Image (cartoon, rainbow, N blue to C red; front, side, top):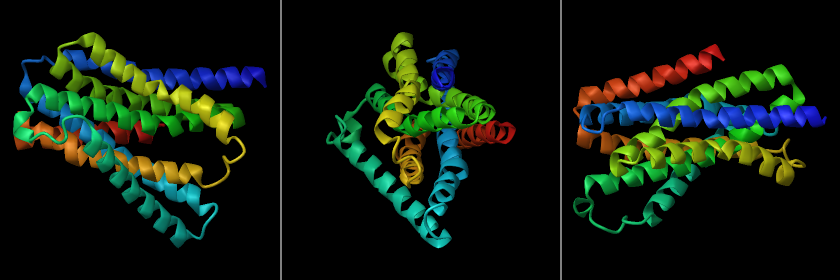
Length: 257
């Protein structure tokens, strides 16, 4: 049992640290190349929108359908999706600089806010993911390995989505890298804390609610923060191609694993 726990924690940690790879890759976007920044922000939005609608919401309905009737499960998924969006709006509202007029915020301040908001949202998203990987490995090791690989693959573009705006805002590779890494470390934290606190309730609806909430938060930040910021730095078609590229990367990751 001790070996299984060690393996489960190791896999969860490695999957979470894949955001560090994304954080490193973000440095290959030259700070002077604003079109690349716009493309990268669109890519990040595509990643988050695709994973929300194609993975998190179906997973939410599937988890809730084990407890509720199918229509009730769908209704609860929709309800918690919009609760998640509302929660994201509240976070955004109380972030520093929200009450200042947008025109008074320079571009660096806006990008820094986008990066910090993205890191916070992805940390929330990674928390239940870490618990899922941990529990799956304890239950069935091959399944746990498959889930860990899949999560690691989509954590790479998520790391880019955190590091890219922070790097452009601060010109600090170190800060961008560590913010990306910290957002991924929410996975092993979620595994340990979630297991200790919620181990008696893991068969309840908690996962279903968490997935739907996370989807709502991720869609909100994509539409309200990432895409508007991308449009400030690039032309429409470049942003669209970035969105589609992000969706394609996520689609291939989910399809292969």
